[in-house]
Length: 150
Image (cartoon, rainbow, N blue to C red):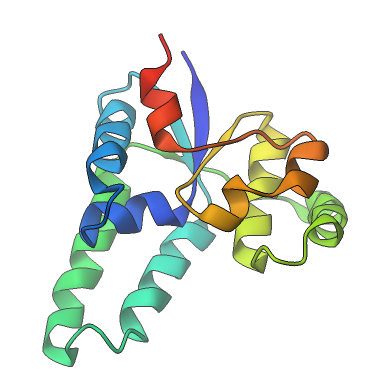
């Protein structure tokens, strides 16, 4: 069975409709139905909570519902939780140096994917275009490429 580390952007796209929502929903369904193994770190949940709490686009009285929905999607996805250990942070520092355009949270996700030796699935354009991370052996895929695989 194929395994993937899931970037926060994939989960957010299932809540906030965009061009990738349909493919992200299909990908998450395949994780949920155990067609694929999925992995996340606690940072994924933290990023989602932060995005909702500090969003100017979401009315204050709607934020609780979005928080519940985001946690429900994460929990119901059946993704395994992976927590990097202290020695793993050396790899984070190494990957941080290769592409300064990519945000720290995404470097953490790339670190987790590399440690687990599995692809990182994202819709984040900066991650998908990161030659530096790919040159370091981090496989970065759009969910559309994953669901098309046999």
